[in-house]
Image (cartoon, rainbow, N blue to C red; front, side, top):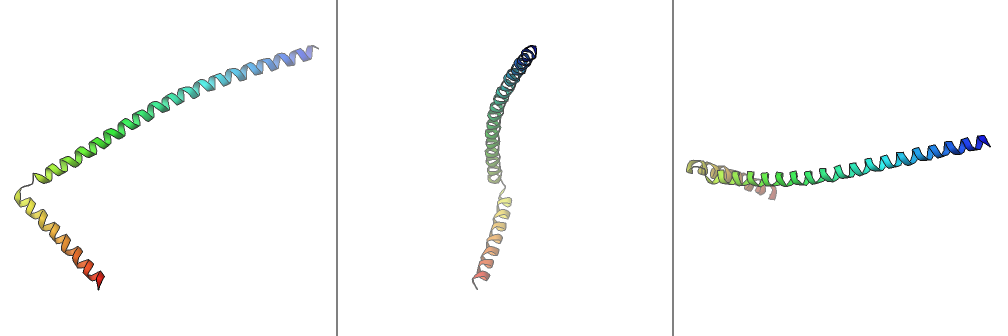
Length: 96
């Protein structure tokens, strides 16, 4: 009988350890879920800031283009016209 009682006592200890381990792992899991939610929120915030920064950069590029001197505007127009002529020439060659 003593042997059976020892085995029962040992099983109770193992069950208590398993329950304790499960509770600890559940707590860790909950903490990780909270941290994940926090990181996802931060990620969304950073993505919004990045998008805003990209939009501001585009606005600044546009503003810089608008503020070019007349000489610079003429040079840009000439380059664009040259590129368009090259494209038209390439299309013409493809159509032959």
